[in-house]
Amino acid sequence: MLIGISPLISPELLAVLSRMGHGDEIVLADAHFPGESFNSRVLRADGLRIPGLLDAILPLFAVDTYVSDPLVMMDANGGDVLDPAVESSYLVPIKKHAPKAPAITRIERFAFYERTRKAFAVVLTGETAKYGNILLKKGVTPIA
Image (cartoon, rainbow, N blue to C red):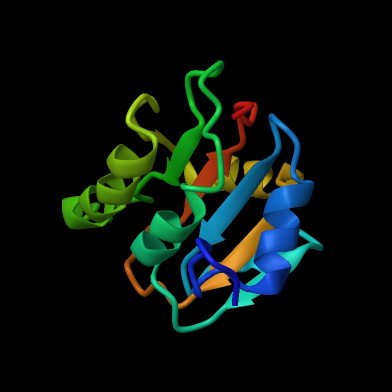
């Protein structure tokens, strides 16, 4: 355990977050996401929900403010309907830790898979919400 770092952040996740550079992306994927099919760097966070992980990650992670879409979620496919409570629950930690971040962008399922292929890493979580995946683009870490 480290002081000031949430116990939700595993040593592996902390290492990945610190190795990412500005412009790199990380996917926090729901429990049903085929992460291993799209990326070779996959971390497990079984049992953890994405709002809690966002609340743990975002104090350590500068969201990119130089692009229009540093926060991306998968759009509903076919006749599916999105549950607005999912995005609302993600916005709580986002607004708390990254209040200047632009709105979450929604992209088509296969476009999200393509972004996942290029992402720095994928974190497979215990999130059970349908369309619960979110991609974060790292920005420039401010100098204290």
